[in-house]
Length: 483
Figure 1 (cartoon, helix red, strand yellow):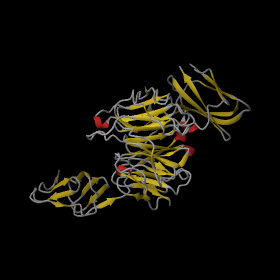
Figure 2 (cartoon, helix red, strand yellow):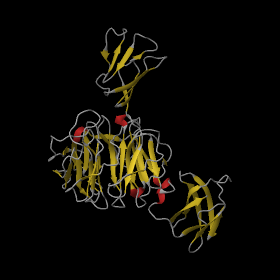
Figure 3 (tube, rainbow, N blue to C red):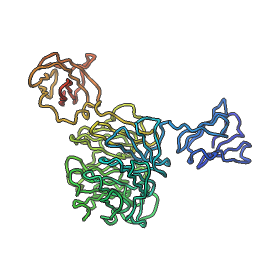
Figure 4 (cartoon, rainbow, N blue to C red):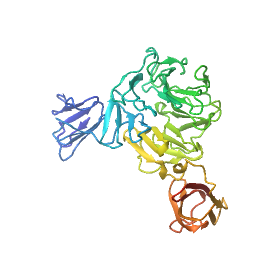
């Protein structure tokens, strides 16, 4: 209820729709007018002008200038609640995402005012074929999967062969085989595979959850699927009741590898894109009122798990991206933002600046351009240029043999040398949070000295630093330790 601060007989009631009484509750009228989105969250009445009313709901922000008789929708305010995110590999400015109660939406130019809806219902997983982007797959609640062959202009049903008697999550996972996008996998309470771009499906497993159950905390359905990019015979699934399974023979045989993991909602299973034996799992205890961060790593196909949650804040973790070729760099999406680890989970820190402390449900990495996209629940989408980062911006190459530092570790001063002929360029020194510590010009020398001082002349603290050499012909970086 919201009582008018000017006229206490004027009261708004919000729920599915918005209602108003002008006689202290004697009678009520629906003020939605047929144009206001359902599922109201908040209403505000201006204390000096009660004709000015602001309404917030699953559709965004609505404003009335006549006390709620008619409403104007602000369509470009970035408050969309995204469940998922995706991008077109060939055109990474084209972003897609499934949203709460607002379908599947996309932008073709990466702008804030050119989004369009391409699929209805609540929007969930959306995939764009990285080889042929005429094939687009979008999904609404409980596994209603659609298939487009014209780039998302129109869709047809894509669930032929999937049994309607299965159990389906609110957000059913569907993924590509990273080695062949004509092969897709779909999860109900069991796993299905399509080898003809979702024209037809065949089950390749039995029940991979804990089995039929009741209650509203777990539905005993699959929530995540991961196929190894190193070996597509390796397939992982996770479910909302804490079960994780692996097949190492393309789905012929399955092993429960849940032992050692908390019995919580599996938000993501992610096979390492570099090393076949490594796999990661993230979990959420939100539905159990348990807010500990949960990130686990296995180096033996899930037979044993190590908790690498470390110093992550107390919030559920919803997604994980493993960098390549340096797979020690990890990105996670949590209920408090995006975090990065440069050492396989030993230590975590917030990634970059400008992202509000909002729930991030999904991350998408476009490696050719080092673009990371975060799909948030309530603040639309954000993108981050990893080229700005002192570590990830240079991960297309290994640490340079051309650039050398000594002594390393150092205490008071360090010498930075360059193999081969001397040249002109610039050295930039960063700490592991990405902050620029010092810039040093290289005026045609083979060796320069750094005395451990920052740009303002202060001594920098002990720790790990990244030295990057910038010039017109190559990229070079190296890690340096001060103690």
